[in-house]
Length: 221
Image: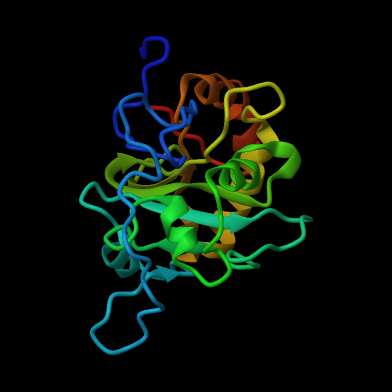
């Protein structure tokens, strides 16, 4: 059992810049804005690292993007909301070796240079102004999938803020699952939402059976 206010052990989420505390980011993690690195270009030349992929259509893509723990951060547009630069209408799975933080990654892209920490909070975490979903994905190679029982669960998370009107709701999980089906087709049969805070855990646990009826898997370590 996870004790109150303790992050789930497999995760190393870090969803904000400049050290602001948000409950989707475990205590002890550095802020998104720590370490002002140089923004990377598009990296289209031979031998240059790929700054991001828009689709994960084969397992080999994970090795291109993941950090040492196997995590890859992503951003994706919210359906029904006007697209905004630099994400536009794309899913962006970022190269963690080039930009380990969301905000610095966004600033490295054309159209994102002037984004502030407040912009990030509004565009990713605040429901009323959200334009982008943000979170992490990783392949848990030895973890049995909740539906099939076979090893190899493609875990995905959503960044949320533990404040009134901004906490995770079931429709957020549905929306995130739709994003993964569209943007990570190589893992469609292995998808599972994994809550990243105790607040998310309670919501996911209460909705797990309902979501299972909709073929949306939830994995709670």
